[in-house]
Image (cartoon, rainbow over all chains, first blue to last red):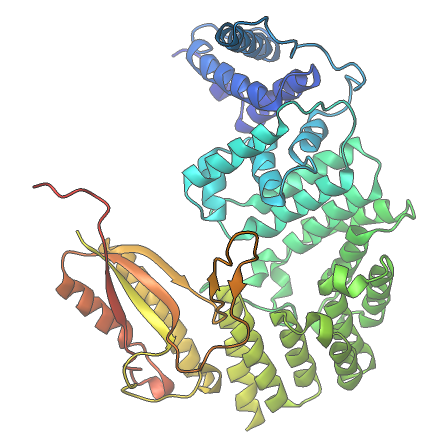
Length: 396
Length: 136
């Protein structure tokens, strides 16, 4: 039997190879969308040719074939427009050749001119190497819709020169989006986000990149305990902590410590620190709420209008106040947020939690019911209805 | 094979056969039984090869219309009268006949309510117009 060189390269290695080739072409000054097409065509050609004639240098082989495709494409364009071949292949010299291809491609895909949905889709396609079908499945949209979204995003990048580093903050935000929408679909996008964040930490010293990786690891560690076999949500205080992934927690804590050592705290590091304190408690009762509250204070102090910019932090702080200074103090904090956040189902859920903490079960039931009415996710809605029914029973 | 939407409503429709309080006022075990039944419905439809789609809608509603050239869209503000019809969600099914759609709607309507007794909820059946050209 002939050796299959493509099969011999595992999927991860093949994706890394495709990324390197694509990054090389875009760095050289090729249009992102033409380059991606060319690399895909080169890959198809490889699948056909490599089983018979394995290349000595797969990277060089793919680059050569993709370049030939780009030249063919430009020639036919030129013929059609009856003009000289465009100068699209002229090298962009200011960008250093070294540096990681993943980071470079992330900067391209997370271009600030694109909408978040497009940034996410393009990142999954060009950086993670997922197929359009897989991405469409992950977001529960038809494949044609996702194909269109990706091709519009690529068109928007046409003519853009990637000769200066992009905004790392945007990249981190896109990775976090990939992570948070990662649990719904068939494919584990959360794992992809973690993989990319880990690569990112290898090429940037920015502590927020490590903060984001730590945050993802520390949350991901709890996933095995977050749902029961029927898919019902289990909240943190009721989770079986024996199911948490100890190895992921240990890695998350290690990464977080190295980030905090730089003493440039940011949103992701602080949220990771809070997650670490939850992960560190052997039982819910042993949670170090005073420390968590202190971190929430830091988190909200990062911006002038912390509560509006980060509603989750403001609500988390109200819960922490309830656990440190008592339910009534927590409720006072929560009601201070009503004007800005009272329309959110999470505001009502926090209120319900604090009423329950203080033993006012009928007020808790009413607040859980209102939270359920405003929920936009079926699992959460069902969870809130159950909570309402449970505390209403306790109120009798 | 014809497709049907089996619509569930938050409100509107014929006089309820059985009047029940909102679900957050049910006993917890009745809530569990109800939710387990809904999961069971989707499983049955999938096993039968009759499932197309199932979705739930939030109760928030806004009516919108074109505002005219250079004008913002016109939207209703504030809640509408409590009597207006409000869809809560649907199952879309692909079945052999109208009779089968009625049978499945009755099955959905048998979902357990307080005390484990059926809810007898009215289900709204609507046939989906086919996009395929007819053969004759």
